[in-house]
Image: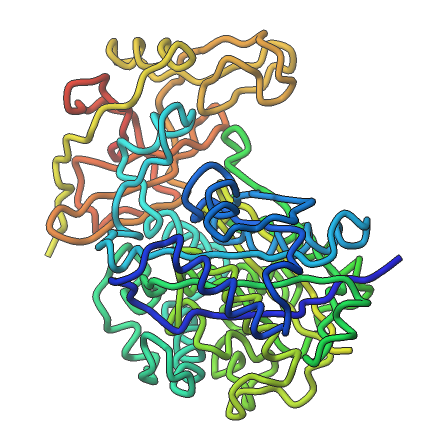
Length: 387
Length: 131
């Protein structure tokens, strides 16, 4: 059976797209990924996108980009983790011979549109069964993540200073990224002294709101080997969805417990084998919970694990989000999974910024979380190998 | 300095045939939760299909309206308010607001009891105050 490789990756350099449409951004990142891979639009026979793509599922974007040879489409939407899950779906389809070259795109412009992302009450549409029991209470992305942090502090003694170390590490990396929205290095004091948004999360515990997008191309091994780019094999992947479990709410763990277990099992490796990790960083607490759930540390020890620069490349044990992550670089369309995969690909190729590139990059991981951490959300994990 | 809960009048819940008994009861000051009659287990939010078996052999039963705060957060700004999860004595945890109290004093594990607060033109919503 053939294997699946990531052959193209592209992150749009814009962070504010006032003069471009969302569809246009999708096409631009697709073109960027094709250029990166050394492929053309006629090579694409599979396409994936999620809810950020305008139109019905993949249909409008397929037409806009005039993709004519598709044998496979997928518009699985688990929010920001969709694109991590797409990589796994793409690998499955390639292994089954259902497609040879699969394009995955993400794009959006919440910043240009002046969207209040994290602190506004947002409906997902009509007939959503949970919303009558939640929206009148002022449910927001910020407060939902904050309740996870609050419970983590209560159960495990996690501190605001420990949360802040996640942002400090991201900002330390972002200073080397010329496209980063927030390239300034910050301190623990800067984070804990920034305004309180939703107790216990401060402004600097929250990710940026940015425009842009990214694209990934997954291809079968025979094609990957003919291209001129470093080989990045998709070694393992998993996905899982968790929710409020009919009232048995548990804010201490995420769906990454199972998505990670599946991915590690498939790859036949363990967390200590991973040299670099892209971890979904909508908020600092998101990173701590996922690190625990993926097995990089014991449950409850995430705060201690991230402290003192342990996530900083060249300093700590587990370099993370070396592009600056969603906290400092980019969170296009309020969906950070695509950029997680892209930076993991850069690391696996040895093409991250020299100041943050990990020396041994044989095995890297990208983890995505979409929806509300630990309640209604979906996680995807991919493990990539530099061949 | 204390942070009094801002007296929000939220947009009303969308009522549909599935959740109508819950909001009809809310208008009478009663908090309903789901009961799966196949398994004897409570569930929340109430719905017409059992989340344990998917059968429609369910009923909505009245909760005592007593619980403890499982987690909380105050969204700051001009109109601070407290979103919370409260674990009811029947064993289900529900999303709500903590109201009519100093929001700086809200704590995990705190005992609370239900009150009903108006929405803008719709059914009132169950919220909680210190017991």
